[in-house]
Image (tube, rainbow, N blue to C red; front, side):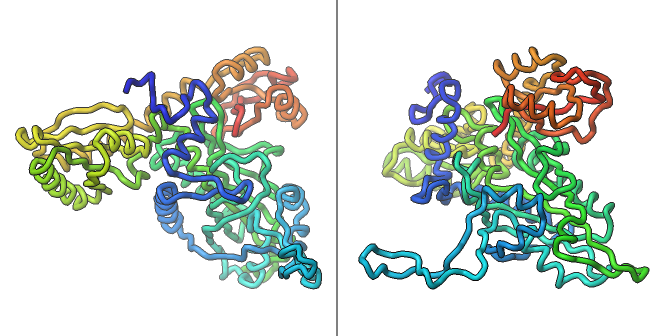
Length: 495
């Protein structure tokens, strides 16, 4: 099958990128639609990848001193109203529980809500946990000796979403959310920046996905935050995707829930806060960063199966090739490589090749009767689709090295794409031309006002993805207003 043809089960990226994405998510067995509008079923293969993400991130969190905890799914409605900007940001996305019991309708209309079971106070299904956590921290914190609190939770959240897309926008999604409490503003800001670095390192070294680090504008800031830091990635269709956020919350939630601590000097002070999170949206980012018209492409670090071994032949020959594959599988497992030996004789070798290509397994190793004679094997890379005949002697070490090379080269390829689709423009005309032709990240001057930011968004549907963390000082004029600007910000159309 040629590169131009692709897999016939998958819509070509060039024909319909959105459908291509959905095809891969479904055909590769990552997720499926559910009976509940806006919610999805994460299938075992997709969940295995998410578990790999969780494992790497969880180790990084614990290495930086954080502990896992769990807080309630339901939040009293009154809690959200305690922090004005927070409720304003989430009010339209909240699912509300009003009753606690169902009954059989005496009129024969099936199951109905029991009107006698109305809650005294309505409950919000968790859209994020700042309020319930800071209500709890009030009891945990009395003095400077109780600080800092460094807590993370792995959970699900619900945000009512009308424009749904598997992994990228769903009403219910999985995530982690860190919530920390500090004695000083400086400590909280340091924590916020530290966790942004953890996310950026994960994106680049685990997902092989290059990102821009920056801070959001006031318009794009998390509801209730003083500052929101973010990592922004570029997908293959030229659109940006916010891959993670870390928020400096100041003392807003401490004041809302009256969380104070006794200082060493004997005074009462409000606590300083952060929160930070990534979600199953990263699964969508993974698909759109690396995959092709033949299916999923996975960085080896995240691949549930890193190497698939396929013996081929008939009768006695097949038994011999199976024995050789089992021997190699044992060697690879001893090196910590995740291996699958496919001995299913109900499926043809050709069907298996296509299937594992769809699943994004980084390496495929095939051994046939001729390979046994020559003490060789056919090694195929998923990312480049290149095949080579390699000697069996030293094969385990060679495979380990090849997996490392694939991981590095996927990052190099993604970075080259990102860099070649990052443009500096100085006029509104050029800005729109880039957006409508290739898309990508656009570095342009902005005057720092919400009015110009909103006008550009309304005119072009592009938003300021971030103000670069290490923004170069450069005198210029805003592409929209013509007013002075001291540096370029990152614009893009985004998911």
